[in-house]
Structure formats: C-alpha cells, structure tokens
Length: 462
Ligand SMILES: *Cc1c(COP(=O)(O)O)cnc(C)c1O
Image (cartoon, rainbow, N blue to C red; front, side, top):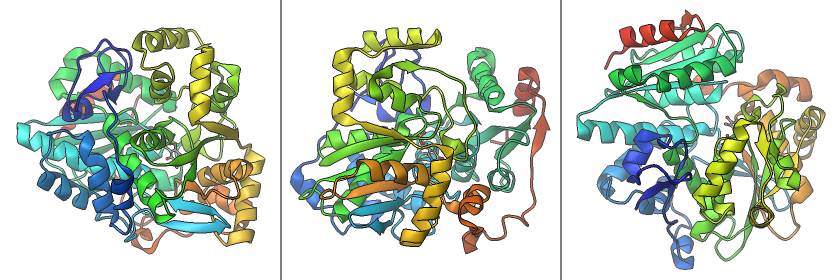
C-alpha cells in the first residue's frame, strides 16, 4: 500500500512514513494510491463486533506490512482503553430515524481522541522499532492540543510542545493542557492569538537546522493516519443501524474537513452511504464552495463552536484531489491561487463534489435554539458543534434513511454556551470531576521564534 501526494511532486511513501512525515514535501497531503474495498459480506460480518475489532478490520488494509497483526491489535487495545464508554462510539436516538453518534467519551471529551490516541501508539511502536525519537510541535485553538498531550504523555520516544494563545482558550481546554504531569508533554501559553501560534509552528518547520536537530514532527489534522482512524466509526455506527443491507446518511460538523473526508473514504471502501452532509457554523467557506460560489477566504468570525472557526480548510485539498479525478497538477494550481485569496471550482469537479457532499450552515442564534429544542424533544444536552450539525441534519434528512449526526464534543467542554442556551450547567463526567483541582504546569512565552526554539531545545526530555 503506497501513499501519494495530492500535488504529485513528493516521493511515494509507506503508511508508516506518510504518518511520520505529516505534510508532503511538495506542500501536498498524502492519500492512499488506491482505496481498499470491503465487500458486502465483509461489512456484514462487522455486526456485533467490538469497536476495537471493527477498527482492526477496517484499517488493516491501509497499513500494508508496516505493522504485524499482533502489533496492530495491541496498539488498538491501548488506544481505546482509556475511553469512558464500553462501546467507544455509542449511538443515541434523537427522533424517528435520527441518531446521534457520541464521539466524546475519550480522555479529552472530543472526537479528536479517536485518531490521536491511536497515532500516539502507532508513533511509539514505529519509533521504538527504529530506535528513533521525535519532537512534536503543534498549535491549537483548544481541542487538538489536549488530545495530542493526552495521547503522547508518558511515551518514551516523543516530546510534545503545544502552543496555545494565552487567555484565549476555555478554562476546561486550558486545564486539559496544563494538568497532565508527565515530563514529556509541555504546554506553552503564547502571548498572541491562534494565528500567531500557527505561524510560529510553521516557522519552526521552515527552520531546517532546528527542524532536523530536534527531529520535528507534526500531528495536525492533515496527517493521513488521523483521517484513516476516523473511518472506523462510520462503519461501526452504520452497521449498528443495518448496513450494508440498509443505506445510512451522516451529518458532520466540519472545520478542517478531516472528519467528513473520513466518511468519503468509508463510502469509497464500499459502505452504502446515501448522504454525507457538511455542517458549518457562520464561518461557512465550505458551504459557500459546495453551493457553487467558489472557495474564497474571508475573515474568521469567532463563534460558540470554536473548533470549527476556520477560513482555510486543510483537508479540503483531499476532496478536491478526488473531485478533479486525481489530477495533481490541477490541485497544485488551485492551491497557488488560494495564496492570492481563492479559486473557482471547475464544472466537472463541482459535479463530482455534488455527487458526494451536501452542505448547510447554522448561525449562532440557530445553534443556541437547537441546543434548547433538542433538550426539550429528546432530553439530550448537545455541545454547540453537535447542535450546528443537528440543525443541518434536520434540513437534509430523508424519512426512510437513518441519519447519523456526529456529536464531536461533550457539552461540559463548552459549558458557557450550553448553559446560555439551556439554563443547565453541564457537569464534567465523574472520572474528570477533579479537573479544577489538579495542579497546572505551563510556560508563558513570548510570540517569538528564537525564544520558542530555545525553550524547546532546553526542555526535551527524551
Ligand atoms: C476539530 C473539531 C471539529 C472539526 O473537525 P474537522 O475534522 O476539522 O472538520 C468539530 N468539532 C469539534 C468539537 C472539534 O474539536
């Protein structure tokens, strides 16, 4: 199994090398050269299996011979053992033929744990075998950073440095980054905003001396291993509701397009998915693009679903690659145009996108109203990201096809907005109830490349 770049100018890699590399050297994103197929019978045989066994069967073909079956089973077992629900990704019913896929039972209460926990173990196994180590640097507006720290903490071949904007993440998000006590994870509160954090991480990757000396690696959402880990719950939930004998649909609260793209892969593998619906908040560049208005950047408007506040959606490049018939030259040209503000999608590619994706947008008021109405109609308290999706799902779903809406975060992760909408202060799950008492460990640091690099060099533990 080989991985190729969406821009066609980077070397073909194995799964393991694509995972450890992250971004391709030509600036593109890695995708599998061919998408493995699962037959009707193979999908039917997933019925009743554990999440772990489903993960093994769905992901195994993507790994080639990088990991033995025994290694991969052990990795999966370790990845999901810290989840607070035996089903890992349970379904709840909201209304006739409308279901909520709860993806927030991992250690940081957001769906990013599904992929991050798995790649933590994949990195560790690969690096141990190679006798190598890496330094992971990442910028976060909240959820990715804590998920990465939880996934890599205590591992012996990795140090993790997470840059977050000082004073601009929620208290729960901050505490999830500052309370892990393991010496190899490091929270850095940068005097700047999220864009500054992201820019400094980019600067570090472009400083080749530094990059090579600390063996810098990235685990942001463009990492193909993260996308593939997310394919699993499309299968597990669809099969629970009768696939492959019955078609199902999905609505996905979308930011960087990693999660919904995993749904596209599941469909290409053979899962009978009827609709894949992209739900955006007021930062609706994806909805505008999928409605035929081109892909043009605007200003980011902060929202109550902050994990979806994006202007450039990094994984959308993968969707374009397939919509353009895997024409890497066309993709490279579009990405050049994007540097100057945006691009129009060709008629043929628009048609291909329309065959796979529908889309909708939810305003701030509609998000709050949906949290309130859903509590009244089903008794479920939903986080603002899930609420964005529930509203769009209700506009798109068909009476005779089960709709599965992805709930990407626990309501207690965004307590202010949830309380504002519902009057209920969502409590943290009991296993995390002491989060507010745990001691915090964080370094406040200037928005300055030299200061950051110096700090990282001096604080690597592995
Ligand atoms: C990251 C995130 C999203 C967006 O997921 P993408 O894969 O970037 O589209 C949605 N909801 C929550 C809670 C998130 O943390």
